[in-house]
Image (cartoon, rainbow, N blue to C red; front, top):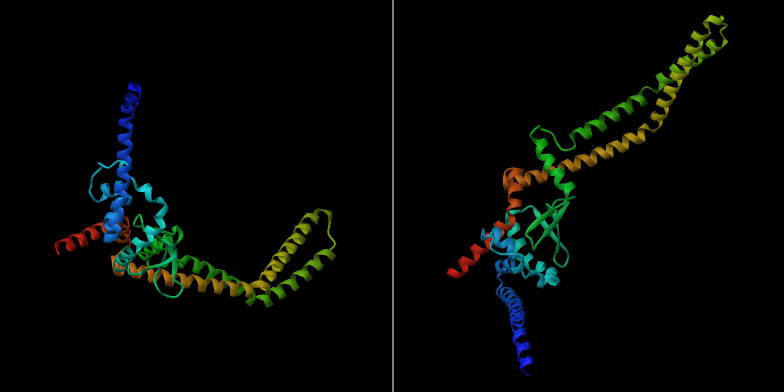
Length: 294
């Protein structure tokens, strides 16, 4: 009997720790539930990532991973993202008026740049982390467009120039078909003359070289003829490609103007992107203070 009581006493510390751990989890979930009922998005963000909230909003490093219980709601991230997206997208609509969002699945949002024809899919919105996840290629094009703007160039200026030059070369091949035909006739006559010419042994090397020169020139003209045969089709393809690149430049120009109108330049745009979490949570805190003052 005495041994049984001793065993119970030995278990008490672990039972106490277990009870405390369960209580902390229950309290965490109850606090999150209350924040949800109260529409307190700020507290929800704090609860789902206390470490980041403490570091970036409270400017404190006192919270450790051991105190973070956010893994308790890992299985409801989609629902949380959907819920939190409402106020976040409303905020983004004012700070980034050129972005539009499409919920492709619960809590998952694609970002589109602009509401114009042929607008680009620009990335995804990470609601829980209050962050943009831009498509690297599309983002890179826009950044490059800003860099080239300083040199009074568009993103596809060099590409269009190169394609235009190639089309001009092909058009020259088409335009000079008659001249090539005449040149081929002359070369064939020359080839016939050389082949019929009687030569001395010491001149055979010179004649052979002359004959090879004629063959090389005829081969070159034949290659040009073949290129000319496909030139019209290639020129049409080049024209289509130039039109496509010009449209892309137009879209990039729309995007560039939108950013300039809102942020003045690309550097300020990037700066706002990097501080989005802090800016949004600070905005929520401000709203909470106004409400509490009332």
